[in-house]
Length: 283
Image 1 (tube, helix red, strand yellow):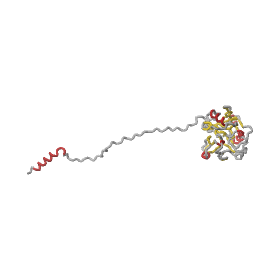
Image 2 (cartoon, rainbow, N blue to C red; image 1 turned 90 degrees about the horizontal axis):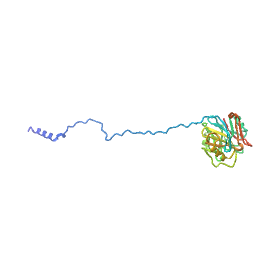
Image 3 (cartoon, helix red, strand yellow; image 1 turned 45 degrees about the vertical axis):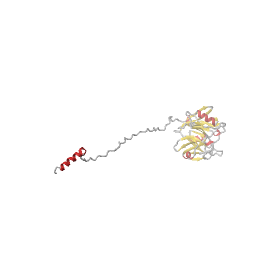
């Protein structure tokens, strides 16, 4: 009877065989994720456009000079200048034509300027036919309907001069100096269509290249339509015209250029010349 327990043990070991492996403790390892880690993100650098500073004027600053030229049978006499060194300003006479200056020569002498020329239109009563801002003072009123006020010459609060089509109060509020006149003859390098082709008269005009170069002066008798086409094709200055503005002409035409510019003074005025309300002067 003592051999029974041993027999039972033998039978148990035979039944278990090799599958009865002793239990072992499994070390505590970090669980292995059941998915592969994402590859590192690939970033693409998008090239940014190169920032190019505003183009500086390629032409040197030149001194004012008298320019006389004949283009398509129209005689041009005036002065070219650079707005980086010289300024063109409107001068108004609050008490009407002739109350302070009898002529362009008189205005140039009293203002000690290099040039003076008749500027904006005025009513038979002597009031500006359009807005004028001169030396901080406003005169006249905004001309929103007449072709004689379609363009403005202005100097903004930063001192930049320009010619543009008339706009509303935004242009006025930011202007140190302003003269409303017209019509425009050239706008953005293109001629203005629909201008009068029948009336022939002397003209006073202001030209701009869109940068720093300007030309101001008079023409021999011509129509506005012919003048626009000539200025579109040719220029009395040596550069392409971006904007051209017609000033008061005819009997009002009056240009005086001091001898300080060319050594000899120049004066151009119409027959039966009349006194005007305001001038543009070059300082």
